Image 1 (tube, each protein chain N blue to C red):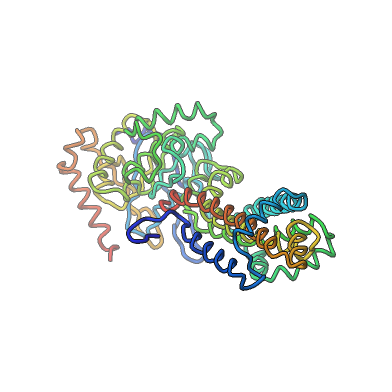
Image 2: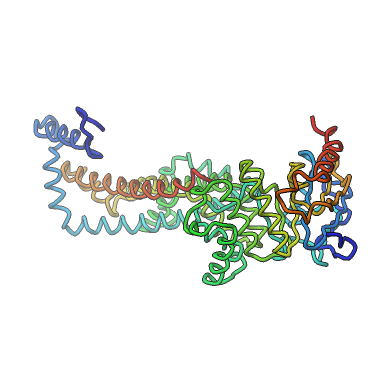
Length: 250
Length: 257
């Protein structure tokens, strides 16, 4: 962004919005929106409390496990679908259905099946993240230069070697962009899971704060989540740009 | 090169048919490739020359018939053959060194050993100093040198080249053709060379197999004999060279729209 010919540092627009928030908050127009400074003060207070730290740990654990399964299952399934017509036709309708399905509606069913704990949240997170990872990986594999596969075959590559040395790398830019979107969806998944179960992690905190109208607490937790999602997305975006440097020249 | 009767064949193609669904691409094709020589497969586009090369490479199955390489029937790709691809087929994410060593990597050769071999062939094709570059930092001609070094480094007896110079510019191409003649002379390998350029085929070949399309069969085998031992810069002025180029064009012209 440029202002009066000066190059402003990245994300300086956030300052403007932050300032606007502060002013509206200070005017005390609505209890719903406390001043940004109050939110930060509250954040620094609750950050060291036991429920908050537990929420961070619980959420982090569920998120890590959920995305781990989404990646380790999603990428191989996507590669298989891209390579094999039969598997592709077998699975593609389901992947498309689940990608656009309102997964939130499934969470109560998962609760019945897997209980009110970590397991349900991990599965919810995985379900939110995995489909886009599968679809992107599949698309990445489908656009691989067939000459590369032929080359590997001509030098006697085993199917495993072709998988690890050709398919995975050639599809890497698409895989990473799938993983990035998948991780953003996983943030949604982990919070929605926690909210619906409402006795675990940030979900429990949200319930508590909103029921007692502790708005600055509410916003503080929300800010933490936004910052988390943003950081993850930016980090993966950076990784993605690094590999697409090679990808554009394929 | 008048040892035609005494030389044995590195590759023999016996009664090969190839159908794509109901299209007959190759019809009862038989052809011998003498050891240590360069044989060109020449013909108009769509005559199945690349199909034949890929069947010999073991990348495509023949519908019927067999291919024999050094006495053994081909059932798939093998270490006795190495392929040079038209569009290079280099790993865009890997350095020149890893690309050249990639054939050896797939065959499980330890890293230090395969890199030492790769270094040697990188130097042989004139790319010393480019080991750590990635393919898109190189020109088209240099990329094909990488592809050639990769094929040479696995030390196969038979080199299969699928229009290897068609994606490089004319001047680079001439240099490649001269280098190829040196390679044939010194490497003691058998070269199978697919091209659609008549001049190129006559310039580099010990034997030219003229393929005609729909369905493909070998219409003629031509063995230039007079100018092969002459200095390479006089070949293009040799009368036999010019006669053969004209003769091939006569056979092909009716097939070119």
